[in-house]
Length: 201
Ligand code: GRF
Image (cartoon, rainbow, N blue to C red; front, side):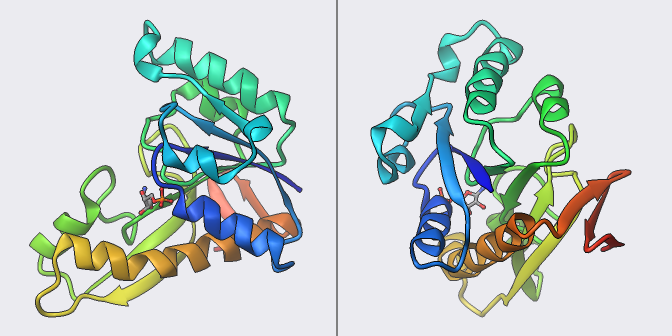
């Protein structure tokens, strides 16, 4: 399968996919890496011919940027589109065009803490555990069907930074594990629900 990866920042989740592909754990191909930020360090993790970026702030509105992005993504003929630290909301046209093959990783145990500052909010709530979720993307922010989660305990003295740092390797494992399922043809979304081997999760 061909994977398009959407990024805005560092790209450690993209790197986890690249590493898994390189060492044979993930029989797939990164067909393109797409960013709303031309200066995203993540872009540097792949050869120039796989990179696409445009500064979202230079477009008149979300729909105009999304249309450019959607055209570029479609041109690489992806089987799956993975948002890995992509920090811009995708509008309904984009989401509908790629529905059923559009995934996101979010650093919380969804449905908890959709949106920004998830680590800080888990801490402030006094939660005993935290985690990350991979989910299908729908038009509700971080609201699509959850495919899989990774959990870690929250420890005394944790800060948003220590929590994020401890969660990140688990996030990487989760992203690779879900793409292994997806790439093997075992993952699908139907009626707003995630299914593995045809079974509802
Ligand atoms: C990850 O924690 C991801 O879940 C969140 O932003 C972070 C991106 O990390 N949305 P990276 O760019 O993949 O290193």
